[in-house]
Length: 160
Image 1 (cartoon, one colour):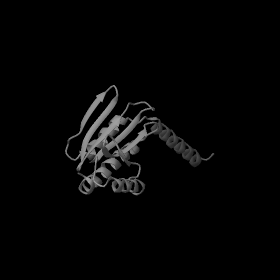
Image 2: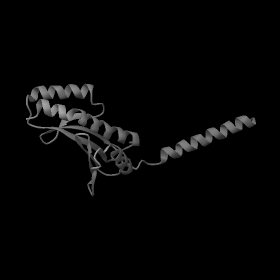
Image 3: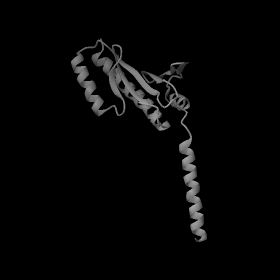
Image 4: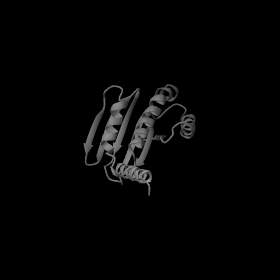
């Protein structure tokens, strides 16, 4: 083996060891969530509630109030992000539901419109197993942006 080949092999092994070490570092979901919220919170309004049932954050993004819930820190726990965009009942609900289903197909990416306790919400939910920081950021950002882009329009067209 030449000196160049030996140096290349050592470099490749070092790169492999670094990548393996980076992949072995667990994501601190709470820190990532708080960093993302800090970057999106438009009114410096973020609030957090920690209890035995998990963690719940609330912040303002444009006209949307966004909630982020982490049910715990184990692989079996769930990250759920949601924002209310319209109260029910609403005007012309059949047309509204058709519009929301169409938007679910075309516009919401990993999020979706849903009904929660007589409210139309934008929601994204996922198990935290193998969830990386980018996925946490994406879920929060997609819900916040989708809600902010649609809440005023939906309220103007379908609100009572």
